[in-house]
Length: 139
Image (cartoon, rainbow, N blue to C red):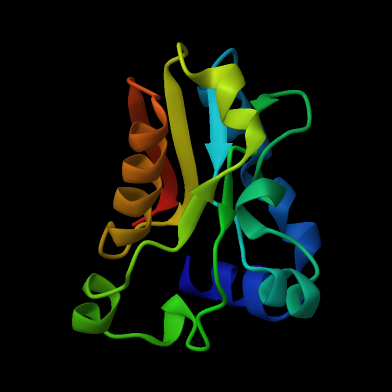
Protein backbone atom coordinates (compact mmCIF):
# COMPACT_ATOMS: atom_id res chain seq x y z
CA UNK A 1 0.00 0.00 0.00
CA UNK A 2 2.88 2.34 0.70
CA UNK A 3 4.16 1.81 -2.87
CA UNK A 4 0.64 2.18 -4.25
CA UNK A 5 0.03 5.54 -2.56
CA UNK A 6 3.48 6.82 -3.42
CA UNK A 7 2.85 6.08 -7.09
CA UNK A 8 -0.80 7.20 -7.06
CA UNK A 9 -0.54 10.41 -5.05
CA UNK A 10 3.00 11.63 -5.54
CA UNK A 11 4.24 10.23 -8.85
CA UNK A 12 1.27 11.04 -11.08
CA UNK A 13 -0.15 7.52 -11.24
CA UNK A 14 -3.76 8.62 -11.64
CA UNK A 15 -4.47 5.46 -13.66
CA UNK A 16 -3.99 3.49 -10.40
CA UNK A 17 -7.26 4.90 -9.05
CA UNK A 18 -9.17 2.05 -10.69
CA UNK A 19 -7.42 -0.78 -8.80
CA UNK A 20 -9.92 -0.65 -5.92
CA UNK A 21 -12.85 0.76 -7.91
CA UNK A 22 -15.03 -2.37 -7.97
CA UNK A 23 -14.67 -3.03 -4.25
CA UNK A 24 -15.27 0.60 -3.28
CA UNK A 25 -18.27 0.92 -5.60
CA UNK A 26 -19.85 -2.21 -4.18
CA UNK A 27 -19.21 -1.16 -0.56
CA UNK A 28 -20.35 2.44 -1.01
CA UNK A 29 -23.29 2.03 -3.39
CA UNK A 30 -26.46 3.93 -2.42
CA UNK A 31 -24.70 5.92 0.29
CA UNK A 32 -24.08 9.67 0.51
CA UNK A 33 -20.32 10.18 0.23
CA UNK A 34 -18.37 13.29 1.18
CA UNK A 35 -14.75 13.03 0.00
CA UNK A 36 -12.01 14.83 1.87
CA UNK A 37 -10.97 17.79 -0.29
CA UNK A 38 -7.45 18.79 -1.26
CA UNK A 39 -6.08 22.32 -1.18
CA UNK A 40 -5.97 24.48 -4.29
CA UNK A 41 -2.19 24.13 -4.17
CA UNK A 42 -2.37 20.33 -4.14
CA UNK A 43 -4.90 20.35 -6.97
CA UNK A 44 -2.63 22.62 -8.99
CA UNK A 45 0.53 20.57 -8.38
CA UNK A 46 -0.90 17.04 -8.34
CA UNK A 47 -3.71 17.69 -10.79
CA UNK A 48 -6.35 15.62 -8.97
CA UNK A 49 -7.97 14.87 -5.64
CA UNK A 50 -6.75 11.38 -4.78
CA UNK A 51 -9.80 10.55 -2.66
CA UNK A 52 -12.27 11.72 -5.28
CA UNK A 53 -10.29 9.77 -7.88
CA UNK A 54 -10.93 6.54 -5.97
CA UNK A 55 -14.70 6.99 -6.22
CA UNK A 56 -16.80 5.90 -9.19
CA UNK A 57 -18.70 8.72 -10.91
CA UNK A 58 -21.92 6.71 -10.50
CA UNK A 59 -21.80 6.96 -6.71
CA UNK A 60 -23.67 9.63 -4.73
CA UNK A 61 -20.83 12.10 -4.16
CA UNK A 62 -21.42 15.45 -2.48
CA UNK A 63 -18.47 17.85 -2.29
CA UNK A 64 -19.69 19.49 0.91
CA UNK A 65 -16.25 20.46 2.23
CA UNK A 66 -13.50 22.76 1.02
CA UNK A 67 -10.07 23.61 2.40
CA UNK A 68 -9.98 27.00 4.12
CA UNK A 69 -6.27 27.57 3.80
CA UNK A 70 -3.08 26.17 2.37
CA UNK A 71 -0.82 24.47 4.91
CA UNK A 72 2.72 24.81 3.61
CA UNK A 73 3.63 21.41 5.09
CA UNK A 74 1.77 18.42 3.63
CA UNK A 75 0.16 15.99 6.09
CA UNK A 76 2.39 13.24 4.73
CA UNK A 77 5.46 15.23 5.85
CA UNK A 78 4.23 15.81 9.42
CA UNK A 79 4.90 13.62 12.43
CA UNK A 80 2.13 12.40 14.74
CA UNK A 81 2.40 15.29 17.22
CA UNK A 82 2.32 17.93 14.49
CA UNK A 83 -0.64 16.23 12.80
CA UNK A 84 -2.59 16.20 16.05
CA UNK A 85 -1.94 19.94 16.49
CA UNK A 86 -3.38 20.82 13.08
CA UNK A 87 -6.10 23.46 13.27
CA UNK A 88 -9.49 23.07 11.56
CA UNK A 89 -8.64 23.20 7.84
CA UNK A 90 -12.18 22.77 6.46
CA UNK A 91 -15.28 24.83 5.80
CA UNK A 92 -18.59 23.68 4.36
CA UNK A 93 -19.76 24.48 0.85
CA UNK A 94 -23.31 25.31 -0.22
CA UNK A 95 -23.80 21.64 -1.07
CA UNK A 96 -24.03 20.78 2.64
CA UNK A 97 -27.69 21.87 2.61
CA UNK A 98 -28.59 18.84 0.48
CA UNK A 99 -27.23 16.37 3.04
CA UNK A 100 -28.33 17.78 6.40
CA UNK A 101 -30.86 14.98 6.96
CA UNK A 102 -28.84 12.22 5.30
CA UNK A 103 -26.47 9.66 6.80
CA UNK A 104 -23.08 10.70 5.43
CA UNK A 105 -19.88 8.73 4.94
CA UNK A 106 -16.69 10.77 4.93
CA UNK A 107 -14.20 9.19 2.54
CA UNK A 108 -10.42 9.57 2.73
CA UNK A 109 -7.56 7.66 1.20
CA UNK A 110 -5.41 6.97 4.28
CA UNK A 111 -6.14 7.04 8.02
CA UNK A 112 -3.01 7.96 9.96
CA UNK A 113 -3.95 9.78 13.16
CA UNK A 114 -7.63 10.37 12.38
CA UNK A 115 -7.23 14.12 12.68
CA UNK A 116 -8.37 14.85 9.11
CA UNK A 117 -11.56 12.83 9.55
CA UNK A 118 -12.13 14.37 13.00
CA UNK A 119 -11.91 17.89 11.54
CA UNK A 120 -14.16 17.01 8.60
CA UNK A 121 -16.79 15.40 10.84
CA UNK A 122 -16.64 18.30 13.29
CA UNK A 123 -17.14 20.79 10.47
CA UNK A 124 -20.13 18.90 9.03
CA UNK A 125 -21.64 18.39 12.46
CA UNK A 126 -21.38 22.12 13.21
CA UNK A 127 -23.24 22.76 9.94
CA UNK A 128 -26.10 20.50 11.04
CA UNK A 129 -25.25 17.07 9.62
CA UNK A 130 -26.23 14.59 12.33
CA UNK A 131 -25.28 11.12 11.11
CA UNK A 132 -21.61 10.93 10.07
CA UNK A 133 -19.36 7.90 9.67
CA UNK A 134 -16.12 7.43 7.77
CA UNK A 135 -14.30 5.05 5.45
CA UNK A 136 -10.68 4.98 4.33
CA UNK A 137 -8.90 2.77 1.87
CA UNK A 138 -5.91 2.15 4.13
CA UNK A 139 -4.73 2.63 7.67
